[in-house]
Image (tube, rainbow over all chains, first blue to last red; front, side, top):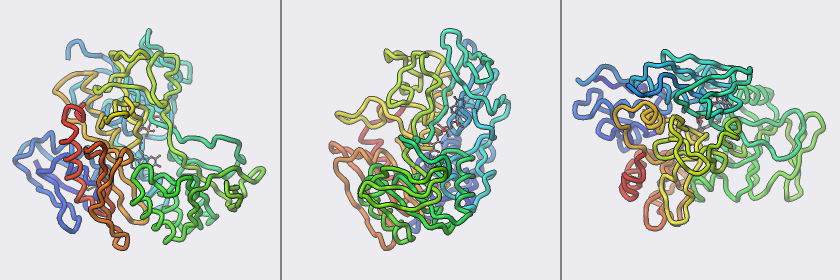
Length: 65
Length: 403
Ligand SMILES: Cc1cc2nc3c(=O)[nH]c(=O)nc-3n(C[C@H](O)[C@H](O)[C@H](O)COP(=O)(O)OP(=O)(O)OC[C@H]3O[C@@H](n4cnc5c(N)ncnc54)[C@H](O)[C@@H]3O)c2cc1C
Ligand code: SF4
């Protein structure tokens, strides 16, 4: 699976970090960092992260890598 | 899917109704799915209406929400009555829509001013048309008076300042937003407002409006007057559940009571099979119960509408167990500052201030009650929120927080 975050939309809601902490996190400067091709995280968890983003900045393509 | 419903009707075409419809399809529901919404517009998202749409940075069309495939959308039609015995919803054109499964997602409406107001110039903000009216008023450059210091009133003031309008904000409490985010963040918000040139009047109420046809101003409880050509009241929202009256469903603070699985409860508190409630229309079980807490709570936040959609869909059509239901969370954007909150900060009997830097506009505060974490609020510090949220979940146990 491939994950993409549209940084022009992202407004640091942090909902993706809550839903899939193994994929999304913040660095010390409040920038979102993420693993674009996570292997250990279940697809359902990533889907929940995408659905929880209030600005629909997270898109997910394909099934398990 | 044997034994499941063959047709499901969703009443209310907001985020909660749409996400539940999506979740139903994702769960393999292949029957007829009808979405009834009383607005003349295609479904849209509300949070931008008090932010980018109001300032003009975002076109209203950009707030449109994706509608899942294979859904019959009936726009501009209101549900006026629920006939549970016959399993049908009566609509305002006299027709009836039969259902086997029903999703109640009619959201909320703006609390109206509790007395007479001049016919023109007194507005509220809930929907797209309200936002267009308010934006047009701002474009005239007229002074704006905002009544209500909750997150909506504060965001409207922020957007109006960005649009260049002179703004006064009347707040009954001594600090704006204090009830939802606490005194510390309330004080920071008050500072942002005054620094931006808003005339902030706290600890006073509006006692009356002046103007015969068009509003010319308001009188305040301290005897002073404020002139304004446009007044917007932001007094909160109340569940839009009138249409279910007489159907025997139980209510709490105007919301329809439901259980953890989002099943509607009848007046005796018994779950009603085949009817689920999602979003702002619901009074759901208290997510973080403490001694003395009410059994049910109406929580009008975007994430709540989204977080419970899959649970409701699973209740109607089965399939794999839904994921854990997270504690509530909400946000507010004002003057470029990002307020983010989890849990129920307003329930605190004690707060811990981890960082409070009004100059750099950074805050991290956690809220506690009876020794447990019940909430956290950050300003421009979302990175700190996840740890507090994990504590809320751990200290309340999955059993309580999970649906
Ligand atoms: C201006 C504004 C800004 C906001 N900003 C934020 C924010 O920053 N953060 C946050 O967490 N939350 C915010 N919210 C709250 C958030 O938008 C709501 O929690 C969310 O919209 C709830 O979704 P819903 O689908 O339950 O209800 P709604 O969005 O109210 O949708 C319900 C729909 O049902 C329709 N309906 C009502 N009655 C009937 C009927 N009888 N028949 C047919 N249709 C009916 C309504 O017209 C509406 O279209 C904001 C709300 C507003 C108004
Ligand atoms: S949920 Fe969306 S807006 Fe929030 S941090 Fe993640 S990508 Fe950004």
